Each structure stands twice: as C-alpha cells, then as structure tokens.
Image 1 (tube, rainbow, N blue to C red):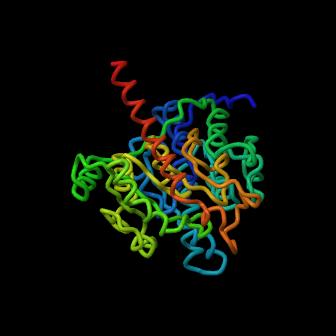
Image 2: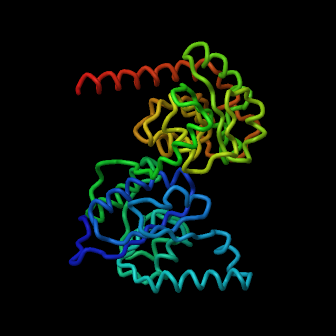
Length: 354
C-alpha cells in the first residue's frame, strides 16, 4: 500500500506492544523510525510492568503507560479490576492520541486502540482474535514467511517512516554499566550463559551448559557468567560458572552485562534477542521454534539446531524433546569459535579503516 499521508504531523502517538521481552526488543526499530520521522511528537508506549524496564527513562519515549494483562482478563468478573480497566480506557481517551500503532495484534490491544479514540489506528490485516475490526488501516504481512521484525518494519513503512535503518536503541546507563563492573572485574573476558526460557521445550539441558564451562576456559580463555530470572535458580545451580548472577539483574543491568560479553550462549528467550540486537558474538539454541520467524534478526548464522523430522513443532509440551536433548556441546563450541572469530575480524577491519 501507499504510505499514509498525514496533512498535519501527528502530535501524540501511542505504541501498543505490552510484551514479551523479545517482542518489545523487536519493536524498538519501529520506535526509532517513528522518532526520526516525527521529532517533536509525544510518544507513549503501553507495556506490561515486567517489560517496562526496557523503555522507562528512554530518550525516545515521552510516556510509559503500564498495563497489567491480568487486569483485562479479570475485568469481566472482578469489580475492582473492571474499575481499573475503565479508568485506563478513560485515561487513554483523554490523552487524545492522533495515531495508535498496534504491534501486538490481539483483541485486547486492538480494543485498547479503538477505545483511545485516535482517528488513525494501524495494525495487521491478519492479526488474531478479530483485532482488524478495530483498525482504520490494515497492513498485509505473512506470519509464515516474515520475521517478526520484518512485519513491524512494514508497519513503519506504511506510516511513511521507511524501513531502514534497523537499529535497536537501548537506554543503558552508566549506572547500569558500573553495576556490572562491581560484579565482574573490568577487563575480564567472559561468556554469558542464559539457560532460562518460558517454554520447557525450548530448554537445552542445564547439564550441557555445565559441560561448556571448562572448554570455554581452556579453548577461549573465557570466564563464565550464568544469568537469568529468579525462576532459573535451580538450573543455574547445576552450572559451575565463575559468576552466578541469576535473580540479581534487572532488564537494564542484564543489557549492560550482555553489552560487555565476549560471547553469549542462550536458549530462545528475551535476553537472547537482547544479545542479538547488541551485536554480540552469539550462539542461539533453537528447538521447537522457527528461527526464520523469531530467530536473531539477520543473524541466522548464530543459530544452532538439530534438523529432525518433527521440528519445528511450536509445541510447549513434548514427550522426548529430541531437538535439544540430543544436541551436543561440540556444535555449540564450533559455532562459538566462528562467532568470536567473525567479531575479531570485524574489529580489525574497523581499526584498519580508521
């Protein structure tokens, strides 16, 4: 479709992308393009409390609107939740947004866009749960063939913001970096291991992460850092890493931790997408999901997976989990070496070009 024409540039813009962490990371290039197009606009973002750390105090975001999905779910049967939901909807309407960009594509996000009263509400034509009914403009995209970021970029292009450059503007502060320096001595070379992920079927066994510790030290001279949320503590206890930061980081400090890493080895998870966006040498372990759709964007060379007949199955349950149970450590170590060598070459070329 032809890019939308705005006779008057939108003054107030709302981005709706509540969750999850990886999805919010994928949406950052749209924020960047929208801000480059409309420098003076007031940009607000609807986001869940668990993901808010990625955009709070962000120089490109003027307002963070926290939205608890449980409030929406309980609003139909709980009076207190219903009042909170009505208050949120009235509050959105009072803000008088000119443009709403729904990157979530579900009934609740589209309904929220509609209730805002914005004259322009843009979303995907093939969004789920009847969401397109609430949009004024619908963008065609392919869930089967397009990466999530490619779909989001189509939204930006439809708004006249273009689709390049693809940049991930993270708001990492010096305070976040100092915190990392307090945990790991500056100058240390380390690999970050991220064994956690929301789906059990996405998890490479913790014992195999443990088996990487000594080869990473011996072959590459790397200390190991295991990181993740409090729910990852049991897995982390099985990994004899030099530093255990599980449950100690927030979204901003884990970004700073990854920013300094010499290597990241991670399951398909939000922090993995952070590492990919930061351009770190990366080994992304994939099992039941499809890296073409939701892998590290433009970095499929960082993916290791077994090609088995039943994969990708996109299932959260599995009786055998062959796709990750049978993945050994040697393919991971070989890919880690290629990733670090490629990073070293890039640094050398950059220095030579100065």
